[in-house]
Image 1 (cartoon, rainbow, N blue to C red):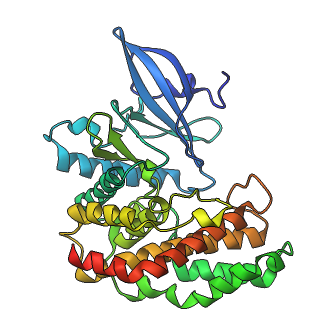
Image 2 (cartoon, one colour):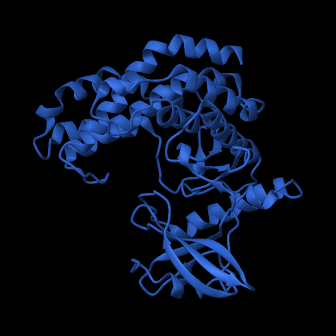
Image 3 (cartoon, rainbow, N blue to C red):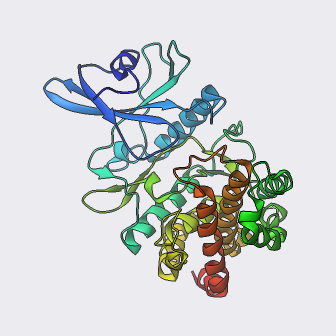
Length: 361
């Protein structure tokens, strides 16, 4: 199979010994180009992950890689000496010049990680235990980075979870109606406008700034093949300063509903309370000791807000002509918006019970 990029050529720039055996696309990510490459090292096949950083999304790849380098070094310092330590934190492979990234002749930025064996990611959660393990891993990730020394990490995507600014973008897209779609999304626009007042709640709460992952999808935690334990948090491109609740909210958004993000049958979209309980208990088992009372109290609300936020982002992109998110059919972004808003409604119906649960943990 012909690859989009010459991984063999890129591999020569990194400190990897042994004979290159081949590479293939890897994973289900939509942002970066990811490959798994195999090398013969003294008769043993050893795997590495090569990634081309999407510099159209991440405008400062060098700063992004400095963030990742610092985060990995801090996590490694915390975990050194622990059992199975090498599988619990990503290992960056340096280039032959000693850097942690390589810029090729086409201006593409590359990084390489040692492949973590005997563990895998799952695109869909299969059980409450899996959800709990992933949430525990993300909470542990935040906890271990809570004392990351200065300087402050760079913002790899500025204002990523600034919901009021996201809403302002939506309002402009409604006013502009660039491709004459507002009439097709009348109900969704009305729903968004009715919920405008909640956009600033987390920012107005004056919560402490944390180091956060900002992309806490279930498939960004590796689960051990033998034990099912969440052992390693991956995909660190969006690790930057933020609110701890952003991460928890996105876990609620991406893990509690059995429906796909673009499901057209909205009867399938619902917040499953047992799954929320698994996430809340898993997350608080590791993060609970460093969260403030205000952070803990707002956990259920964060699930509603982050779900609403991605919903208005899908809606704004639909109204603007699908310029940001990749679409695969007419109305794709509107379908995505509708699933998010339906999930918001499901959370609202159960919010009192969610609050009661969190209070008791």
